[in-house]
Amino acid sequence: MRGIIPVLLFSQLVLAGVRVEKVLETTSTEEYNQWVERTRVRCPELDPVLIQSQHEVKGTLHRYTIRYYSECGKIIKEEILEGGLDSEGICYISYTNDRAVYIRKKIGGSYQITVKDEAGRELFSLEDNKWLITPTGIGVYVEDIDPEYPVDKTTVLRVFDEDGRVVGTLKGFGGINLENIYTPADRRYCVFQGGRFIIMLNRGGKELWRYEMGRDVFSLFIAKDGSRVGVNCGNVLIFDENGNIVQKYKPFGEAKYLISCALSDDGRWLVVGHSGVKFYNNETGELVWKDTVTLKGRNELIKQVHVMKNSNLILVLCRSHNMYIFDKTGRLLLVHNLKLGKRLTSKRIPDESKPKWFPFTIKKIEVLTQNWFSDVVGEYLIINKYSNGVRLRTQGDTKIVYRIHYTP
Image (cartoon, rainbow, N blue to C red):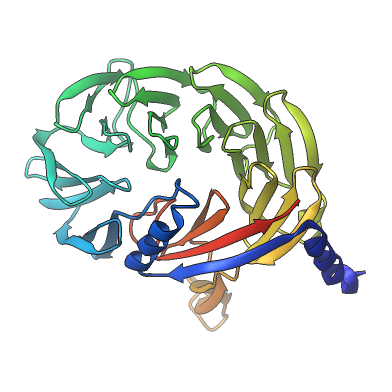
């Protein structure tokens, strides 16, 4: 049976008209931005990389290299900043694709906050600030408390605009989870996780709504048109833009968390990955299809899922670097290995010749890299691989772009 699997997959490939084409692999921001510039005619949702930060740690010293790029990928400005968590100096850089926040720790424990635009020009600065500040991606900035700081209902965080003016306040939470900030394509709002709350702000810094979760939040996800917001907490909650819960799912029972969830660009479809894959009509809540056999039979572990190509294709990316492509009826069309490379890691090997307090030999071994995120924009799958630095979903040291060709 195993011997005919490649024949079946090839047959599915021909019949369905699915083809995966690698169109770019580069460590050059200039090359990537030039590709974006050429491709935007066909796919206007693509964004160039305007800011990148590289972070190195040597002992207690933190070294940040920040580069600002033009839309065609030319370096406009480069800054190298150093500091440490226990000394005066730059201790943290927070940034979105077009804004950077420099946080300098001062003697006495306060912070100097400097906000810069995509060209490295200073927008505003705050002296002796008590809290940190996080950019949201929509032109407003939210104060952010150290996670170890106690938070209660009396905690008040300020919201600043691009001129450093206070345009709002948020009460009763401790700040933003940097991994869980999302904006729709037109950036009319941002939604983020702050502790046990899900909060939405508009571009004026006004809180539109919040929802208090009764359990841990694993991740957020949104439709690119902004019509739906999803919360992955083991179960799945789907909100509309006004903060109303419109669907609730328990796709894999009382799972502590789900590996990955994704909405179609228009919010009409939902795919969930855990021990298998489930695909829902998000308007009716109906389960359209499920596959709990294919991946399990091949010992696959899901890393990310996507809905693409006008909701006609479901992509399931695994830790093995295999990508499974299903159509919206659940038919497996193609298995394609992305070949994302390996990295060195350390493994303990039992060794009786070593002391009893540490009876191991440390051996360096190669494993498949898991240091990558994926995103889908139009007909393109974009892989962001990273080695170090700030780990944003949309940025990495290496960008790999695949075009998914599909004819139903």
